[in-house]
Image 1 (spheres, helix red, strand yellow):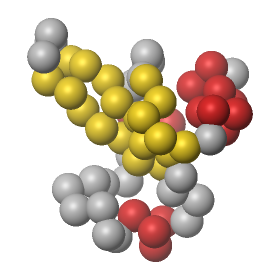
Image 2 (cartoon, one colour; image 1 turned 120 degrees about the vertical axis):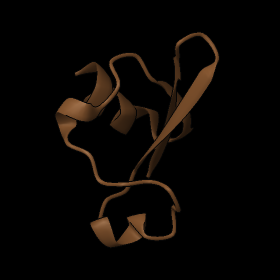
Image 3 (cartoon, one colour; image 1 turned 30 degrees about the vertical axis):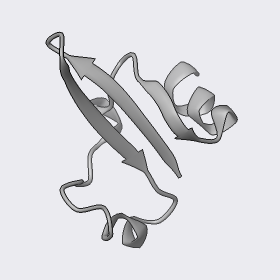
Image 4 (cartoon, helix red, strand yellow; image 1 turned 135 degrees about the vertical axis):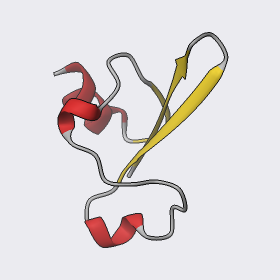
Length: 59
């Protein structure tokens, strides 16, 4: 699991969660499925595996 954040428009912080199976997304109220194209360009890792984060966002 990864939890990342990005600051939009100066002060609005948006959170993104990455789970290994879609069923694990259910407990995260307000989160929805997105495509790879929807992912932010410059997120900051809040919690999770730095190596996985690097593979998804830096590689």
